[in-house]
Length: 212
Image 1 (cartoon, rainbow, N blue to C red):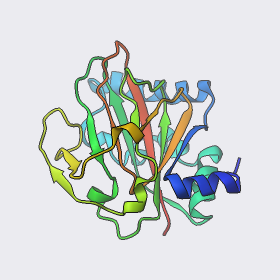
Image 2: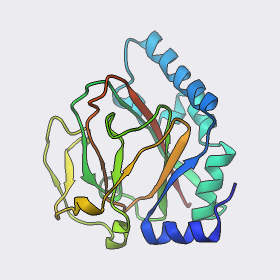
Image 3: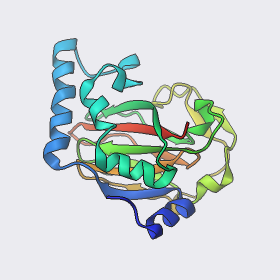
Image 4: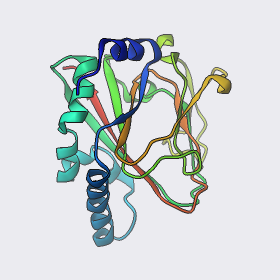
C-alpha cells in the first residue's frame, strides 16, 4: 500500500518512518530460515563480505528487495524510477558486546546524491535488549556532517566512524520492531544501535534504494 500524503510529508520532516508492516510473520521466518540454512552449510554465522550486496548471492534477498510492500514504500518517497544500490545483512549474536555508533550513511558511502533511503526489515524482533536502532528525528536536515574515525574494536562500523558533534540523546527514538516490520530512514539521518545483551539473536536486512 502506498504511503499517504501525510506520511510522505512526515518523512520529509523527520527523515524516518516507523514501524511499517511489510512482511507477514511467516514471510519473515521463511527469509530467516534461508539465511540459517546457508549458515549451517557454510561454517557459522554470516560475516565479512557475505553481509554486503547480499542480494547478488542470495535469491531470497533478491526477491525480498522486489517485494510489492517494500517497493511501495521506496516509490512513495523517491518516485517510480528507483533501483537498489546495495543490501546488507545485520546479525547481532546473543550477548554480543558490539555496537554501532552515531553516524550517517552518507558519510561513508561516497554517493553524489542524497535521494537515498534505507528500508530496514526485521527478520526477528528488534528490541532495546537485543540492539535495535536509535534514530534522531529531523537530523537529516543538517546535511552531511563531520565524522571521526575512532577504530573502536567494539564498533561494528569498519572504522568506528562517529559523528563529531554532540548528540541530544533525549530527542532520539528507539526503533523497536516486530519480525516482518520495517523502518525507513534517510541517508543523512543520524542513527546508531546498542549492543545485544539478550540471550537471543537479532537479525535484519537493510535494502538501500536510490534514484538513477
